[in-house]
Amino acid sequence: MKVSKVVLSEQIKTQLIDEIITGTYKPGDRLIESSLSKQFGVSQSPVREALKGLMEMGLVIQEPYKGTTVRAISEKDMHEVSSVRAALESLAAGLAAERCTSDDIAILERLLTRMEALAEAGDEKNRIRVNNLFHDEIIRISGHSLIAKLSKSLRFAGWSHIKGVKVSKDGVFHLVTRHRKIIDAIASHNVAEAEAVMRRHIEEKFPSAAEQGKT
Image (cartoon, rainbow, N blue to C red; front, side, top):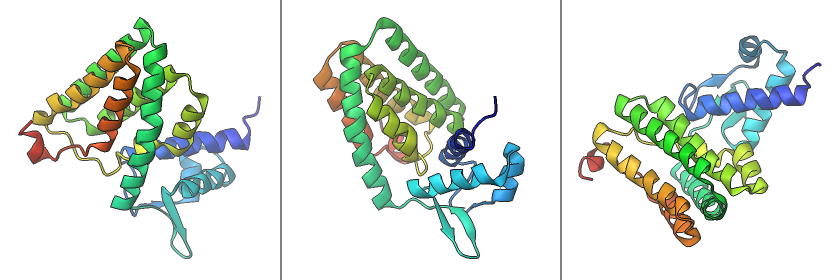
């Protein structure tokens, strides 16, 4: 069966989002249609649609004579994204607390263990990827299809990590503690606590490397 152009463009967009989030493409880097079409083994049409979707999300900009480049994220952007994430994901965490099973908690535990190992190894790219999986899993557990749709299409869960600070070895304990509180609140089926912990987790600025050494 032939894969539709829409499906192809969505797959390409998802891959490019992941590469922007994890730093493969950095602010100012050009995204060239012809190069990307060769990379993905497709025509330029689905690539063009994918880039259009990224522009609508605000992840790239398109300028005459310059083409498409990855957009630098401002502090204002970060604040706006965090406020939306806090609203969406605190709701998801509360719903997850109502619905979660022991199997769901086991998945979150495994993701946290993996995140800790990657942080200790200094593998920031994959640590960010697993962090996003952790948040995506909570949204899945919530069973709220609209939150899942918004998160997938706009990538609120990952976008704020584009300018995230690198977790130092001294900060691994802080990182694990933050996520541990989320798991504990959800596992205890405490809706209010799950919502509050998730909101604090997103709204609180992660400490710098120097500050992490003090935690």
